[in-house]
Amino acid sequence: MDLSKLDKYDEKAQFVADLKKRTFDTEMKCHGCAQVIVQTFLDVFEEDNTPVSMASSPFAAGLALTGNNCGAVIGGLMVLGLVFGRKDVNEGMAGILAGIRPMRKLVKYFQETYQSPNCRDITGTDLADPEKATAYFESGGLEKCANMMADAAGFVGEIIYEEREKRSQESE
Image (tube, rainbow, N blue to C red; front, side):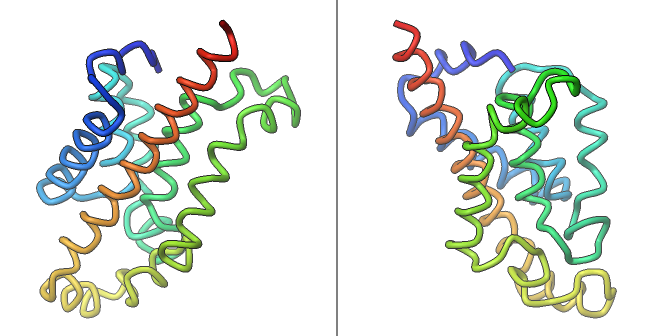
């Protein structure tokens, strides 16, 4: 991702607010935790990457509607991977470790904020069960998830913005 696209924002707060609004609005309209977050960042960074967006689509309501790992965590990690991930599999573990710090921040954030990185734990229900999913969404669950996703996208945005500033200071 071309981090120079952040220059269109006057400050980090404006960038984070834009991410949160876009994520919330898209989730309310389109659904799909990971894909919504990934597509939001692709749009903000003006990246046309349909394969990456498609690859993130199975991570709704956890891993393929299983309630396991939260799609917002997965989408956020995918975005951070697009920015900080290793570029070539042949870089081995050293390549993974070089960019892992920002990604671990997101996982830690979910563990501290939501006590778990798992969809079922965060929502308190099993979205793979049609009756439970219906009850959850009829009781405001979509808004709850959209707000949590917006918060996650904002946190990912903060990480990207801060890492960009840190790296630009280090290169001076």
